[in-house]
Image 1 (cartoon, rainbow, N blue to C red):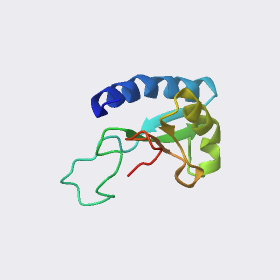
Image 2 (image 1 turned 90 degrees about the vertical axis):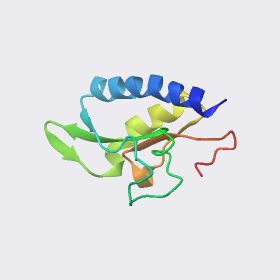
Image 3 (image 1 turned 180 degrees about the horizontal axis):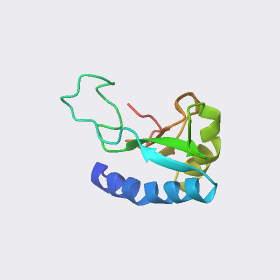
Image 4 (image 1 turned 120 degrees about the vertical axis):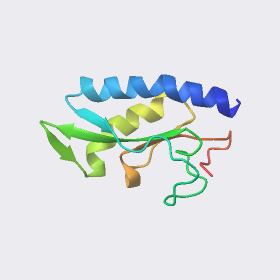
Length: 106
């Protein structure tokens, strides 16, 4: 799968994740989606720079949820959408896809 086709798949799957979040009684806002290569922070091989990652901020009853455990329902759903979808509770609001076929982000 080319990077471009994976980016298009990612763009198709993110709305499904957002629908799942709303269907489970939460709301969300966008955090980081694309990080320009000129941006000083973050890993130089970030999936954000490859347009294969998004950070979503969850809200429940207007309260911002910062604990990664609150993202578990969304992360498990995301991982089941496609074999390339990646999520780890250590960075709960970060939803990404593997850039290669070996299950590695970098």
